[in-house]
Length: 479
Image (cartoon, helix red, strand yellow):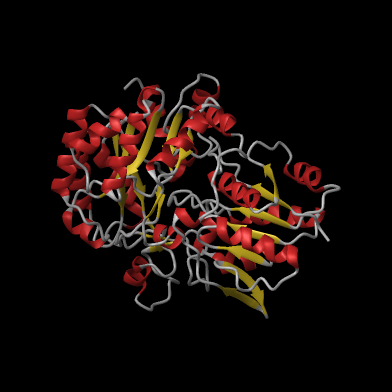
């Protein structure tokens, strides 16, 4: 019988590197249950096959877990599909071990049965993984039936069965430490570490899979636990962070209390952190508390500057809220970025002109332009644009594979009034304003997605820049 060892693998090799926080938490959960957790981080690997062979050679594992962060780069211009790279890692693991493989992670949770079948693995876990992976390991160790494990995807006949996901409160979860991943190396080569204040999202955005991945109910960490996690990383030399939360200010009261706890421990003088926020709820009090707690920059997901487009995307704020939000940030002195999502239902050259005009007027330090809306099965956006019709031959849908109706490969909706000329319109409206991040097809290697951006990599690793990627690029530009 295999001993109680579980190997956890990070296959994500995107650069600049992003620390696999999930593996820290999963390893902590397994350790709390009496299992020996080992970590194989392929992010910095020079030879993946060789490193997998070395890790598995002579070792017998009860279970091998592989986390999968992104199915693709969610980028209309490049449509970089990453699932085949995951399968390459799975196949390499199989060549060196007979241990059962379980997949998990945010990317995996969007297409759990599909990815499990594509990779040919016996198990997957969608949703939170800490409780399910511990229960799966315990049942395997005892030789018991695993089919009742929450969130488990498992083979049955010619297909897979899917158990309801596990979204527990933090009070009912095993201890979650940050002792397993080389967080200092990620900080030094990726420019920042990360922390989590809570999970879940109850927003009504029609295009976003976050509620599927993390649940529709907010599950909040006690502010003292958030501060303790940061202090633990700070003791290892990690002093720049980005939050893992969908939007840190949802819910508002919890964001305030986290900031107060960080300030109470005087962490605001020792750390710098960045975060995603919704324009609502946001006020001068929260902005002030965030600055006192060490916040160095905010990325607001605003999507559009036109009320009719915002309503169609399921957003609960309006143009006037963006104006107020920008004013608060300027008064507080906190750098802020606005992220746009263009090309959705109802988008026209006129709505684009009004949105980009508003961005220039409000003058955030940077504006990100995400073109095209990534389609996912089961979300309202898919229902809006498909209406039971086949995707084949649709001029407003890009990247769909023949016969594929679940948008497994990167598939994007673009308003037919814009179509393939959308980026020409964007370029003309932006007019060379360097505050705007966007890319055309011929410039895909220098894109807003940051992936393998040589300028960023050099600035972080060789020149010592730290912080959110957008803020590093801003500083490199001399702004």
